[in-house]
Image 1 (cartoon, rainbow, N blue to C red):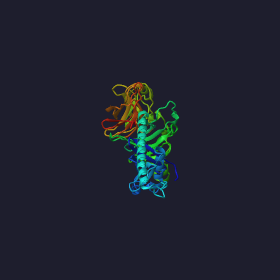
Image 2 (cartoon, rainbow, N blue to C red):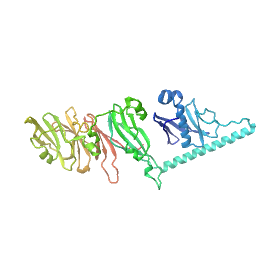
Image 3 (cartoon, rainbow, N blue to C red):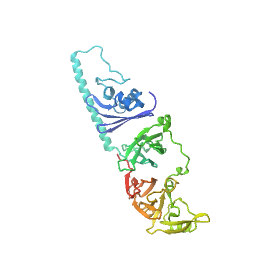
Image 4 (cartoon, rainbow, N blue to C red):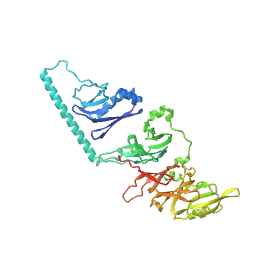
Length: 467
């Protein structure tokens, strides 16, 4: 046997999953408690099923089953042995004293068989004693297992997964990397450095309100590992990530590709993209670079979200105009301004500027197509998306409005986001990620809000992972 591998066992009452993972891929096997001399059964499938379902692992089936059997015994049943029923495709975990009549896997030690048969009476007595002993031991093992499971269920600290880093839009899917502290038992001498985390992908369909899909990427990661975990890039249905090992996921099927497959298959190689300084922005700067203070939706019509000071000093009549401009936060109230553009001295200049009627708002800006990209232009009618806050200093919520080229408001919706973290633009269903407004002694729930640009209807999904 060669190569690193891991075998993990999860419980769900009287059954659960045995997960085998190595550089080639991952296999999940269902297990359940047995009866009599059989402590538990692991359904691994027949050789023909492996040939059809797991062609990448078929040639190493014996090796993988030996590894799985050895780890099941080591982790959960040190007084037992594992035997394979090839016809049924089942690994049976039996007491070491058992003489059950099914085929042992390759490499298992055969039970000693006496050369001289003992008297019939002794055989009968020994058989009865062995049956009773096996029954008592089996019941005892089950009771101990139930006690251990109940104790862990009663005292184990359950945790909630949360977003880790930026999310990606992969076609019609919103992919969010999540981290979750693995459940643990409380202790007076607990060392946080020993905490371990599970990383996974939370996949939401932007076009429906269906429940999200979860794809587990890695378990047992340390806090230092998390510093290098992130989503890297996407192309087609593939999303590349680091956990910190490199991998890729087909978001349509949920299939994972490990480092070995990425190295062997050129189609899975990480795409090479031109260097863009905007991609190195971090924190709030990432968000600000997806917003613009102005928009140009028609040749002679110009829109700006400006404070009175901006309108007077930065955009006086006769100043040159642009299609977009960087946006910076401030506590000053802003209004939507509509300007007329004319040619003067061979250059486009602002010939007229007036504020649209209506109440002032805060930190308003237009949504771009990407970081430092053009303003997102919607058709039917020609318009742009305007984000703003209802109150200063993020005390309110984030509002989204659709504004046409004349500055007319087509609709407005409240996203329910108190602090906006990320914008994922789209001409039909843009997505906005952030946290709900803060409440005293509460952490703001991370949410994903997808808006239909036709009428402003919003769909809100939680980004907490509790199941």
